Image (cartoon, rainbow, N blue to C red; front, side, top):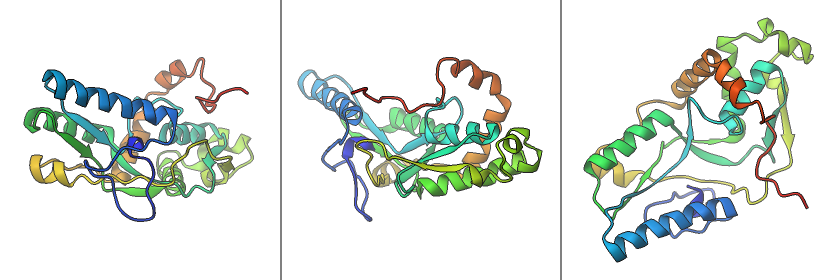
Length: 226
């Protein structure tokens, strides 16, 4: 959804929305979409382009919001929240996204584009609060020695507001009407159920988390020293 730029308080990105990326990172993704379309138009390469809303779920690198908040909760570390926490994203569980991609491959039309969205808009601060609530279900704060060592009695006390990142779009929203009506795809999990599955997975795969974190210390990536 970053390829489309930013929205106001209403509306959603459709397949006809002009791309207007606001960061070099999102511009690189928009460029890939343009190259794909051009190869189809010029050489007849059989392509289909999909754009999705924010994914979350197993195996997501710890820099991203959901796994970062989960792991920092477990370890009693600060939960860094950009700006005022009011940035809005549409969330989609990764397995639902995979099923959407499969549906597009099976039934989609060559040369077309499809938006895969979760119809699940939340402010970042709401996501953090919900993660704190669900982590509490799996590992109560009173039983987390790391939290006690940090001098906290609740996961919500770890919330810390930090400077917003450059080019951070205020709101994204994906309109999945086309893929719903033409291909019959819809996400199967609610955000709450998806987060419960995700948190359970990370609790069961702490070895993987330690492995991928050997050289990554949960710092913000992509910064340019100047």
